[in-house]
Image (cartoon, rainbow, N blue to C red):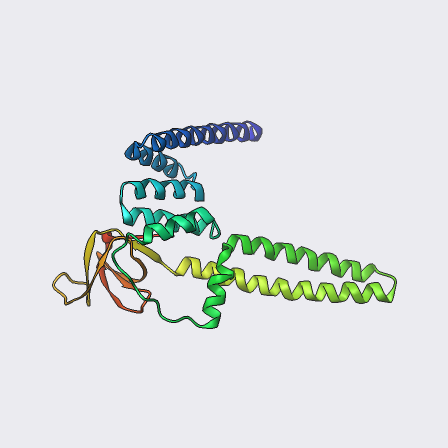
Length: 252
């Protein structure tokens, strides 16, 4: 009975994968023929099936860019980077899309550790760091066993030293993996979707307006109260925006 259920699940997954591939080809053809709305419709169907990928979000970003929809274009390029932080096509296209955004937010000067984190640690996802953690765990165990069973002093010294270095890297990888996972889950980045919106100093419609934002601006969501979201900009400014005017990036 278990074998039959496994076979049914395997066939269902195979059919779903074929359907996603078919939709992807169809969407790409619509894109090539400048039927961008149809292309988006098919790409969205793939996303609805859970078959998300960096390539899917790249294509969605490209399609919205062709329609001059700045907010959605930047949104999907940023989502693509969440899955593949070193995708050159996404990085290049995101630069062009951001040039269409009206808001020019100056960033707060970063410390050495923040620059190091952004330039190196963020190049891999927390899942990829987890793979490296498992690898160094395996290497530490293997090298220690080789040290334990080695007969000559020179080999024992070599295996002991390398196992110690591998163990240090293993601990370092655990720390990085946890830090990247925590950052990914708690750093709630979002993109402004409203063409133009007023940011207020309190979560009520008649609160004082403190500044204005336009579509495509990237923000950090700090808090939520009813239909409002407290946001923070790259320059440190904070305020409240209506919830449906921003869209979270890490919603998958």
